[in-house]
Image 1: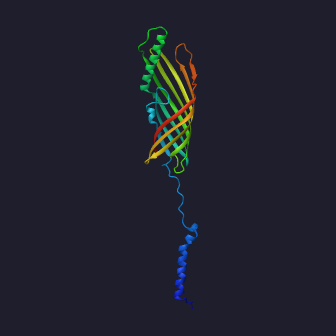
Image 2: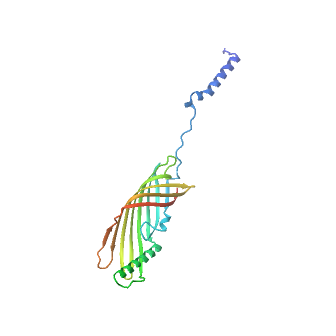
Image 3: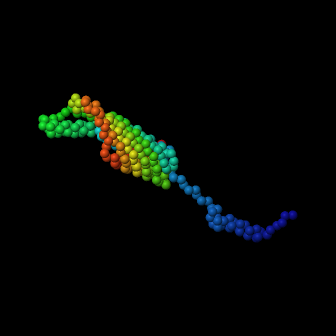
Length: 241
């Protein structure tokens, strides 16, 4: 035969059990549920395609425009690798200014030699070439994943351009190679869902070599720039995906 308990005792035990169950999380905070720490917000899929709109106005080298396409890829939560290719073409506005300056120099040389000054000569400057860039970016933000936020970036660039210069019947070819090693500091932001705004500045070392050839009776002349210091700044626009 089953044992029976007084109803008053049963109610008292039930109240004690209910009170103990409510107070247990307060007595032992570790037993309470703690929300998991949030991870940094990802920047889309970690890929960015970029262009450099200011290069259409003037390129890195004299008398050129630069049409650039670049790609940046996340390789770690706060690190990316980037590469780009640029076509260097003739900047017709600055080439006209250069031709004007060339005419002025020729006229001054004729005057200094005691010859009649030249009002205008048929001078033309045309440029064609390419530029290659590679960089590693270390992003500094703890709240966002790459490629967003402030960053430091070792950067390498090599540009090669050929100038075809003509003054009357005299023609010359100038081959210019510009190799730079930079440390850049910048900020990149993804606005909305995809639009990327990237601005940077930095310092670097420049190795600039110029070879002049094509003048009849004159041996090719190679010159190395005396100035190796380089100050960089720029703006990129892109599309994140």
